Length: 132
Ligand code: GTP
Ligand code: MG
Image (cartoon, rainbow, N blue to C red; front, side):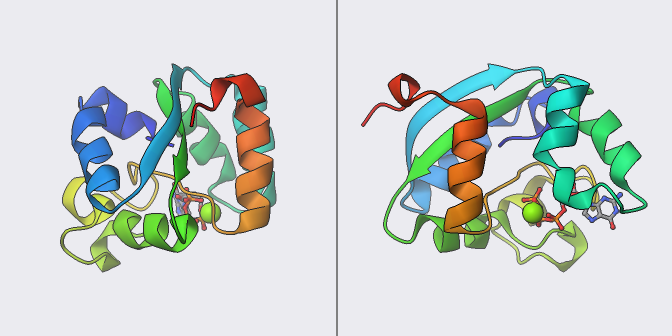
């Protein structure tokens, strides 16, 4: 997911280049403005954290780009090109080092396991929307 800080700053094309150059294929993509209820459910694992309400405000502050990425070891590859959650700790050449604003407005989200990828893809996409 390309997050609100990045869509606001017209970084969709640049971030897609990073993903494609990392060997990932975009097989589904759509732009939406998340409803508050969707953001809360999507990030339910963080609902007890102190930053949760700020995270929901941020995630609903502008459109996001939802994607399904395909490739060998796609989760590892995508986490590598995204960089560390905190951009101050991310390596140069990663999306978060090169574009993120701070630990909250960190430009991109990626599924962190096969299980979360399945859940997150089903949360936003129907089968027909994934084109291979
Ligand atoms: P995602 O790919 O977005 O899930 O990031 P992640 O897996 O690297 O981080 P995590 O799942 O731990 O946190 C989810 C999101 O919550 C982050 O991407 C940030 O946008 C936000 N976040 C995480 N930790 C903090 C924090 O300490 N403070 C604030 N303000 N936001 C945070
Ligand atoms: Mg996460």
